[in-house]
Amino acid sequence: MNFSKFTQMVRLLWQDTCLEIFSDHPEHIKIKKEKTIVKNMDRIFKATLKISNEKGFQAMSMRNLSREAGLSMGALYAYFSSKEDLLEMLQRMGRTITEQVLGECLATDEDPVEKLGKAIRTHLYLSEVLQPWFYFAYMEAKNLSEKGKERAVASELLTEKIFADIILEGQEKGLFVHQDSRLLAAVIKAMVQDWYVKRWKYAKRNVSVDHYARFLVEFVAAYCLAREPARRSELRGAGDELYR
Amino acid sequence: MNFSKFTQMVRLLWQDTCLEIFSDHPEHIKIKKEKTIVKNMDRIFKATLKISNEKGFQAMSMRNLSREAGLSMGALYAYFSSKEDLLEMLQRMGRTITEQVLGECLATDEDPVEKLGKAIRTHLYLSEVLQPWFYFAYMEAKNLSEKGKERAVASELLTEKIFADIILEGQEKGLFVHQDSRLLAAVIKAMVQDWYVKRWKYAKRNVSVDHYARFLVEFVAAYCLAREPARRSELRGAGDELYR
DNA sequence: GTCTATACACAGATAGAC
DNA sequence: GTCTATCTGTGTATAGAC
Image 1 (tube, each protein chain N blue to C red):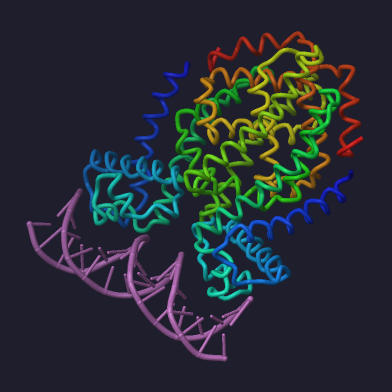
Image 2: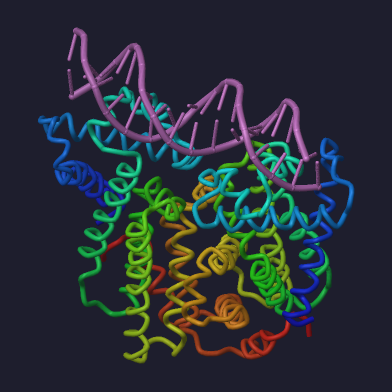
């Protein structure tokens, strides 16, 4: 599967999930036609992402949203019952898709070395296709309800665990040098997140998602696969004091 | 200088800067006593950081702030002229301190290997002492005015450049393997940022700032100093396609 | 299904007493 | 220097026409 096929797959999933999430809200059975639902939910979500990613979800007024989505305020409230409800629906959108994609893509039993590369690439590809959503989820996490926050944290830890497990497996099979797998997984996740949080920076520098993926994989591999070279221990010794 | 001395130094700088920033606002010459100014500015800043980091700056009302800071709304407006003004002052606080600390700490001409380690540690130490501010600056960047955003981006690029320059120097002196220095600098910054953005995670795992610093330095060093081992090229070849 | 018009709560900001 | 009381705009949400 190349990047363009991957993109298509995710876009279809997005539409299905629009419908699925709307259908789970029994209070809004006013709208009947599936086509209308998908069309408007999509508009609303896209507009929300656009405005929120510019100035934040709290700063987005319903009047803003109404204009950007091309629907009146009255119409908007046929699709969700409150601004908070909209936020939760949108969060759920991305989570549902993410879980589905990662579940499908990583359920193979390859060699840990390849698996780690594939996990990094899959995460990056997904966050590339759904960049606005990933950015949104990252920046608006603290505006969520208590339950929403819990789910966001759980999701963070879950994807981190995917990396950690692969690293552990590599260590057990004697392929990777023995290191703190959880800490390594944490910084891998941090670097993946940087891809969608600082998208503007990489875009300006013409760094493609494949380029970034290749770099990350090599960077991580150097640490996992390398034997300890001469000056490493010297550097490590300098870790406890700021000045020597 | 160890971490506790470093902390003391930054705390003093913080108080000086409170006064300095207040004095630059000529409209507020009502308050005369320096002690009062520092005491209240400090309260206001701390309260702003506390509330904003919980639910966002936009979501913080002046009534919230008034309660948390222990000052009436009327009193608050003796220290700044608008909510936006408060935001800009607070942004400037951290920027001023950051520039001062990084300028002092990195103006040495050591060996690039040591320098890179020191740069990473200094950044981490500073973001550890001023964690609430760094988190705030990171999360609220998009609420800033146009000028404020420009300054934030400039600051991001400046600290990134500090890393990039050291890496370049190491490459030129033949100490580091030749790689994309800018991309490496970008991900180093991403990992440093993760330290203060996901503080909750590392705190729960009992990872100290020194532990994290040591890990980062080793991780980066493995990439900069290592010769290419056997399986690296294999991994890199896998970069263009998601599935092979 | 979608619109316009409106209710009513709460935001930021200030005036003037103490 | 700090407080209380109040002004005025804007926010979310809804009612009812079409």
